[in-house]
Amino acid sequence: MIRPFGFAEFTTILLATQFTLLLSLIALIGGGIGGMAVALLRTGSWGMGRRLAASYIVVFQGTPLLMQLALVFFGANVVGYDINVWLAAALGLTLHASAYLGGIWRGSIEAVPRGQVEASKALGLTYVTAMTYVVLPQAFKIALPPTVGFIVQLIKSTSVTALIGFVELTRTGQIINNATFRPFLVFGIVSCIYFTLCWPLSLLSARLERKLSPAVR
Image 1 (tube, one colour):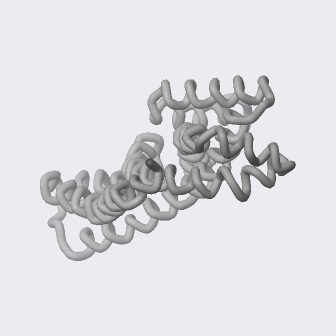
Image 2 (cartoon, rainbow, N blue to C red):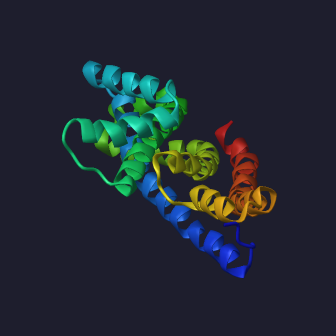
């Protein structure tokens, strides 16, 4: 039976935003840790580590996010682990974010002039000290605009987790639409919420790019 769209339905959609934000935050933190490991391996002197990091980036950037989520969710069940949809969504997005952030940060580290790394070695600084006090602070400024831009993509990518059953903003919109059959209204509201979340970050990314570009040059 089709029911009318009312305040309760609107509130349900609005409250579902918290799950989108929480999933994005988990993926960002996990992806940030994994991405830094990938970037350091990719720019380090250990040959096997560079190849492993490069392969990881190529695989995860070369396959659809939906396939990655499906492999995590259904793959765990195939090998005997009963993984819930929350963990599958968080793990899939974390692996996805690690590859993209690793690629962004690898490029930022390599954009730091090579002479500064060589000067650090000449001064007797260890690899960790040189990275901590010389390379990473400069790479951070270079990486900041594309990282903020990727966070926008990450928030929108959480909508894909609806296809493995994770109930976030998009999935809640689907459920409400099935009950009310008001697709234009329901998905219009869902789209407005995504826009409200992502638009300020897009502006921030553009502003940071303009502000930090002179320092990069």
